[in-house]
Length: 315
Ligand SMILES: Nc1nc2c(ncn2[C@@H]2O[C@H](COP(=O)(O)OP(=O)(O)OP(=O)(O)O)[C@@H](O)[C@H]2O)c(=O)[nH]1
Ligand SMILES: [Mg+2]
Image (cartoon, rainbow, N blue to C red):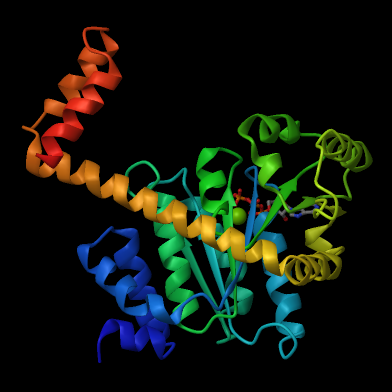
């Protein structure tokens, strides 16, 4: 039996092995994705992002629990990916997540995995997308992806999700940073977690005010701003309801989102492969770096450099 066959059969060890290959950018991971791809596209992917310590893991844990409670209606098999772009190898925060999620360890309907990558730029988003494919192929009906932070990495990772939930916390100024990183635009649902803290009302109002500035098309989904206290499980049922309302409401939008995700992945992969090919097969060692140096020193402009590289690679 191949690894792909075992993944398709839902074997947890094969799932773990497959994700490790993807994480390590092992050449055989492309083969795995090729073999399982036709059996994917069924899972509903929920992205949860927000600043460090916002309570994302606590919230995800509760959401998973809630979905399991409603299992027949929503999901009998679930996957959770906790992605940590800040630590190149599985670090402390991720270990914390692992421990916290022990609650589901005995529950064989839930597969939990933390991820990091030593990959290049954009590598984590690709790895996350591919890891989600593995869980999808293994029969997970719902996949939750947790990412830390509110930067470009998260924006890229959230692109792989069907719904993106952005968590913010009162009294931290998170929303300012999130605004800058452009994460507000990609949110389908806002969650003000730690609503037990002072300043929740103000933060809700600030996010609402910001949303009001956007001119949305009629009938467009207007991101709701929810409040949760994850530690007490408060607001979690409402969050799950809202996610499902989003899922049902936007079936048409979902298809176009999946299309643009496919396009993004293809473009990403081609440019990555093209650069790999250039550096490995065309350029002399260090040649790209010296080109970069010359551009920085204004001896060469980037347009001429790109034209030159393209010509050499396609000759
Ligand atoms: N008061 C309060 N504390 C909370 C709430 N939700 C989570 N916490 C606490 O906040 C801390 C961080 O929670 P995590 O769930 O680890 O947060 P996280 O966003 O996953 O953290 P990272 O993954 O490290 O970025 C923990 O001590 C939680 O118990 C909440 O609703 N209210
Ligand atoms: Mg966490």
